[in-house]
Amino acid sequence: MPTPAETEALLLSLRVAVWSVLGSLPPAIAIAWLLARTRFPGHALLNGILHIPLVVPPVVIGYLLLVFLGRRGPGGMFLENVFGITLGFTWQGAAIASAIVAFPLMLRAIRQSIEGVDRRLEQAARTLGASPANAFCTVTLPLIAPGVFAGMVLSFARSLGEFGATITFVSSIPGETRTLPLALYAAAQVPGGEAQATRLVVISITLAMIALIGSEWLARRTRHYSSGGP
Image (cartoon, rainbow, N blue to C red; front, side, top):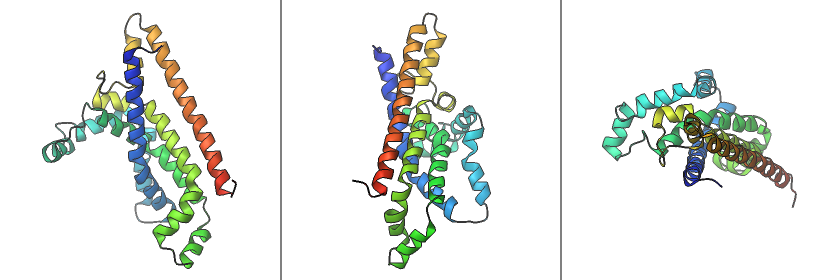
């Protein structure tokens, strides 16, 4: 059975991953549509910037967040002085770090789904009087639902496993920022911590499998209903 500290790390990881996905989803859908449906100066540059977290070490992302959103950073000082919000060394900061690292995975999945939608369907909805927003919500969004679910699950799984950006930006504080990967790392550094590390590995793999199986099931159900099934 998991110890109280392991359960605490598990619940914290789930909280961080859920808020990471929920916070990323609206901008991911909007930016995916922008990249898939429009061409503008700087299109390739924006696309490259958004995918940087995929190719740089997560520690780089964590360091940049620490410099900008830490208590001495310009963004961190602004948030603390104006809104009384502190992100450094908090679980909210861990959620932001996880969201940034996992964002490209969600963005790519949603963008590919949008690119696969026949534009003539959207144009037909517009011809029948639907506004652009209404056409997107009633035509495009149901068709890209499998891709949205896939992107959410990929982002969720990546957030659960995030380590480098998290430990650099918010450190490893028990009960506040010590997620499963950080707890596993801490256990591996302690003599005699092999049993705890093994339990955390099993928990992490189990969560990942549940997420992947759930994603496949949701995608199948969504495709079934989209094709007119009962």
